[in-house]
Amino acid sequence: MKNELLIMIPTYNEVENAPRIFLEIVATGVPADVLFIDDCSPDGTGDAVEKLTPNHPNLTLIRREGKLGIGSAHLTGIRYAYEKGYKKLLTMDCDFTHNPADIPRLIQALEGHEIALGSRYLKSGSLSEWNPLRKCITVFAHFLTKILLGLEEDASGAFRIYNLEKISIDIFKIITARSYSFFFESLFILRKNGCHVNQIPIHLSARTYGSSKMSISEAARSFRFLIALFLGNSSCPEQFRATSIVVKPQEGLSDPQGWDPYWNKKGSASGLLYQVIASYYRQIVIRPNLEYWMKSAFPIGTRLLHAGSGSGQVDRYLHNRWKVTGLDISLSALRQYAVNNPQAYSVEHGTIMKLHFEAESFEGIYNLGVMEHFEVSEIQLILKEFYRVLKPGGKVLLFWPHAFSISVAILKGVHKVLKATSKTFTELHPAEITYIRSRKQAEELIAESGFRLIDYSFGPRDCWVQSVIILEKKAGDE
Ligand SMILES: Nc1nc2c(ncn2[C@@H]2O[C@H](COP(=O)(O)OP(=O)(O)O)[C@@H](O)[C@H]2O)c(=O)[nH]1
Ligand SMILES: [Mg+2]
Image (tube, rainbow, N blue to C red; front, side, top):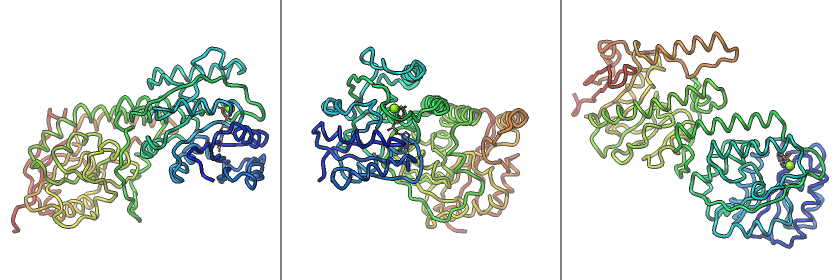
């Protein structure tokens, strides 16, 4: 039998609780299918659930190969619910902290909303059975999610119901947390994408059997995740908006410079600070400057290639003027690009050393802070590829860090200090190999490519950070 509602319960060492909670759910009389997601619990929870399945066609068990985290279990449940076409998904813990008797009330609360959840903060005494440390952590977490993420609701609880018909699966794809941070990250992202949340007061009993899997180190990890989310939101709030753009991975691309790990990087405090500063610099200095040069180089409405687009924070406002294709070697960067640029013409996985576009596909090509990461011989290959895919008369606009740039000097200093003070230091970004030193050097670099240098500038407009170079492919063949 298949119901419209799926109830999903993640389990890890819940052998005493799992069969009981299932039978209590059945006893509520709510028409629902029930899914347990067990992470190979050593206590045999999976087997205990499996024993019930012959007599209960509405019961399903997914066994995963190991403890992959509570957030990851919820995401698996969410994906499963969409795949099987359920209209609603209810999630709860297995340890009877969430009372099956509250299920009908929660379902009712979903009416007219995208999500409804059980809150411990609507009535006093909801946590009366909990130990003081656990109470403190929970209340503090609520305080932080409220002030840092603006979430008024109980953001760290699992007793929730989602109206899947009203929520696009693309929204869930933005979630990155695999552990307890899943709860506040998911609620934050759902809210960002316009979902309405209803709450019902619930009383949380202490655990009946077994022990909690939440540890102090888990709490510390969630705290770090929360700070990263807050900083990410203050520097680039658009990254949490859903997009329907699909990025198709290209097989066999190698990434020797390590761009994917760079874009995937989370957690290290210095890395995070660098990304926040870089993000503000991009918004305040680069974006207006880029628009100025783009207007001078590319006719409105033409097709452009952003060759080495990264997360495309500066591209957001370009799409109503040009048809921009974002291209990068890193899939992680491209996923962010797609989220930051839902109006992009297309988003493509590929290398700039061998472009997968036909000859004369674009009127313009641009990039920022890309060319300096390559050796001179590689740069010449890249320029050849640019030349090939550009239409005659097309232009290339490059923002290329200058050897005497202020930011290069500052970053070198920061690298030195970090290297000297931190044992676990990792480079903030892949190595910069080839800076621009002068117009003459730029002329020499492009000499073989067939391009003509039509503009070169290094000055106050960009706070002496990058040199701006414009190349042109001659109209009409020579
Ligand atoms: N599948 C799966 N379930 C988990 C994992 N960690 C915790 N759970 C389950 O998630 C629910 C909540 O976990 P619990 O330890 O009670 O966390 P607490 O309520 O925050 O103390 C329970 O049903 C656990 O069995 C995990 O890594 N994988
Ligand atoms: Mg619990």
